[in-house]
Amino acid sequence: MDNLKEKVKEDKLVLGHKAFTSRLLTGTGKFASKALIAPMLEASGSEMITVALRRVDPDAPAQDNILAQIPDTVTLLPNTSGARTAEEAVRIARIAREAGCGEFIKIEVITDMQFLLPDNNETLRATEILAKEGFVVLPYMMPDITVARQFHDAGAAAVMPLGSPIGSNRGLEMREMIQRIIDFSRIPVIVDAGIGRPSQAAEAMEMGADAVLVNTAIATAKDPAMAGRAFAMAVEAGRMAYRAGMAGQKAAAEASSPLTGFLREA
Amino acid sequence: MNITLNGAAFVTDCADLAALVDARGLDSSSLVIEHNRQVIKQDDWANTPVREGDTIELLNFVGGG
Image (cartoon, rainbow over all chains, first blue to last red; front, side, top):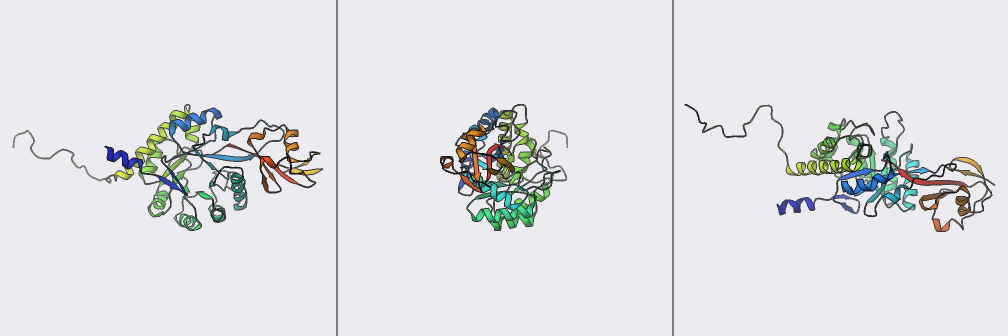
């Protein structure tokens, strides 16, 4: 048992120079109240959370200081949401770092406003630039095995293929593509977007994903702290199942009990 | 003088960034200012003059995924 505890404890997610115990990344979007964020972080044990950068409305200066809600022990992952080109993403990343948000950046470049699917070309260009500038780059991407390789070569710290469209709660629609990326990737694979239920998070982890990022499903639950805990447990269970090495499926039955020594007449 | 503030034309007589923040009634604790594509630290707002034609972005971090 102690051996098992030790095995779980030493299993870290390494992104850039930092090691994380939790494999559940969370987001700050869509919470009914900002006050729900800190309790969710505590309940889930999530050690990394996304934030976005936006213009202040000069005529409505009621500001939404999200950073005040996040404990110092949790790593900030600013995203480049709103960027439509690599240049815009690079600009947002530099501002976030200058503003004291650290080295981590989730690159998100979207031009398709109906399905909010990422533009892999622009995201790759931004990754090349920002990795050279010392950022720990986590690109949000369409699951594409060739592009995933290119992200590795460009210096990304991980790849973040989407499970299904942002906020859709549809789970792993991209399952087969994600599995192929997991199978060959030399950098961590974080399934981001579309994970709507803990069972879907567990499925991604069982497949061998290194982590998942969940925002909408937690933030829009009636009880985000409880939802956060549920996702954390699912991620942990899925991770342990992957490491345990589960047996495959079989077409026919295979008895669990011995097929000899029955108490019956010959 | 005429400046571009958050992407729109804006007329101001504020001499520096700190005055601009005060005039807009903004909470400075969470504010990030980009002045002509350069992020200016809060300690330097008062000694960063606002000049004709400047491009200024008043930004903050918000919830996002």
